Every structure is written in C-alpha cells, then in structure tokens.
Length: 281
Image (cartoon, rainbow, N blue to C red; front, side, top):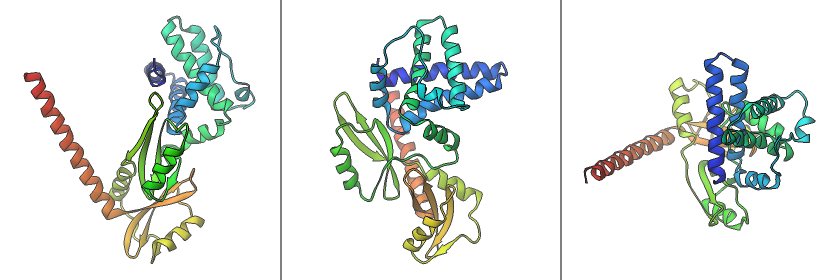
C-alpha cells in the first residue's frame, strides 16, 4: 500500500468519526476530529509526505502506540487533546484495518512533534482559512524554479511554489524520481470573491509597483488588501512563510480566471463525449 493510500484511508476513518460525533451532538469531539485530519493537510501542504513515510519505517510496530516526548513536553495544547482522543479510540477499536488507520493518525502527530513543527502546524491549522494558500518557495522565473527542482536529491512530495506572482504545483514521484511543475490557479477565486464583495473606494495608491512593494514591507496585509498602482486596482497578498507579497492586477486576473473556467468546461464536455462514445461501443 502506498503512503498516499494509507493517508487517504486514515483520512476517511477520521472523517467517518467526525460525522458520527456531529450526528450525535458531541461538539468537542467533532472539533478534534477536524483537527486530526488537519495534521495530514499540514504534512501534504509542506511537501513532507515522503519524509513521513521514512519516519514510519523507523517507528517499530507496537501493540500499544507511544506518544512523542516532544508532545508530552508541549503542555495544554490542542495536539495533546487530539492525541488523548486517538489513544482512546485505538484502545476501543477492534478491527485491525481501522486500528492501523488510528495508528497512522497517531504517528502523524508524533512526526510533527518529533520534527519540532508543533507550533508551526498549529499556527497553520488555526490560520489556514484566513491566510493565502501555503507556498514553500518563491522564484523570479520558471527557469530558476526548474533549476532548483532538478538540483534536489530528494524533492518535496508535492507542494505549491510561487513563480513571480503565480502559483505553480510542484510534484515528485519517488518511485521513478520523476518531477515537474504546472500552473495552478489558486488565487484567482479569491480575487473574484473579494471583487464581488466590493473594492474599497480609496485604497492605498502608488505610482509604481516598486513603491507599492516598499510600502507593503512595512504594512503587511492580513492577508489581502486592494491597492492602486498607476490608477489600476491590484490585490496585494501576504505570504507569511515567504515574508513577501504578490501583486495581482485585478482586471487581467479576472480575465485569465474566466478563460481558465471556460477551458475546464470545454475539457469536461469533451471527456463526457468520449465516455458516452465508449459506452455506446
């Protein structure tokens, strides 16, 4: 079973427990199960799936799961409450496959604690809905990004990076060491939604992009703010991990997003035709 399949199985188990807690009105347990799957999200968003896979190989199988000493030293955190829930469920779960999923969920928390990422993870979980999608690196050009990717002996599993102001998905398959990247439309829906809510009448105004960037260094957005550059509206987006802002020209971004949506619709229609023709044969 691949690491991705194992993660997905554990995700489904946690999701089923969350739904059960919600149905039975156990609000605190429901919140904890949501948190459980957020650890997986953090591992995946930061490109650590293969590192986690290596970590699992180093953990000796045990009839009773162990708790990271780093987690035990982290007093009064939601991670400790999550671990207490998982240990309880592990003891109460009789089905071997489900027990395996709970064991992996426990290992996710231990991995994050043992690698010194508890605070970063909890900050990610707390703020991910209010922050820009997480990108782990920034490059000025695609050539720079491709050079970086080729140079890595062990690339991240799959992460978002920024090239200029645009998101790209970087991927790596450990089995055959293939790797690559493609444009990902992550911020365009944000721009569309924020514009629909209304652009403030008097946003900060600058003559040039350089002036806007200099101002943003001392006035970081939280995480989005409209600014005007040479009379044109832009959305400034703060990427806390990278300590930088990207600037998105509103009109052209919305145009690109509409073109992208139409392209996806055409592709889906073509796929539907192909599937229908295959069924008729």
